Length: 155
Image (cartoon, rainbow, N blue to C red):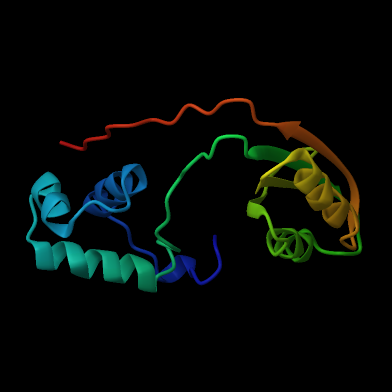
């Protein structure tokens, strides 16, 4: 579970899941629109969002954008003991230009997504990741296009 979440305190119902789905598709959706989509009052929606934030389920509200000529990359990272994977992932996530770092299962330990204005910037990020204690190797893929699901409705 993510930082700040305790499994014994997390109770998410179907309405919470629908709310999260709506916010994932458009984090700027108004409370009035969310209330209408969910069949709740605006105050009930506000309380649910507040609770989900307090539990650490909603970590942040953000936008997903693409600028012309920016370069995005997926960087696959392998680690080696004795440095724990969560410690390496936290250090990778703190590197300027890394948008997110995921701990994953399989042969790869960490998947990072990075954005910079040019290839040179991506190379700098790769060098910084390779210098993190515990990183044994990395493999980078440049993102050519993205296809995002739009227009979600939960009714």
